[in-house]
Image (tube, rainbow, N blue to C red; front, side, top):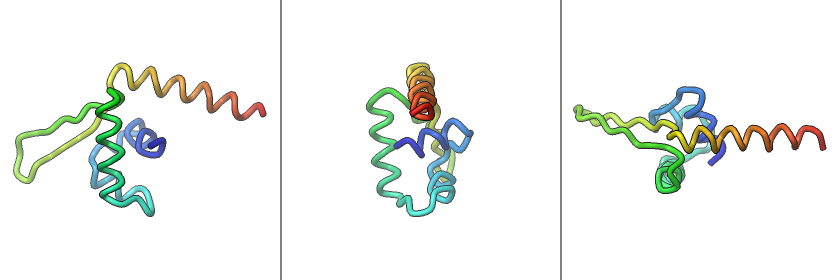
Length: 80
């Protein structure tokens, strides 16, 4: 899940690009993680009415604050 959040933060917000950017990440697992993140209110799914369908994910306001907290925790781990 952390890798998916990292990708979204870096601007990789389309599922196909996320799967290609992460070795060993299957489409099934990626979709499960994205669904969980949407259900938790951390990311938002944006679907564009195009053919072929275009779907992107972006951090919600809550997700941005959540990621900031994760960054702080990560910084604390460096001091151990």
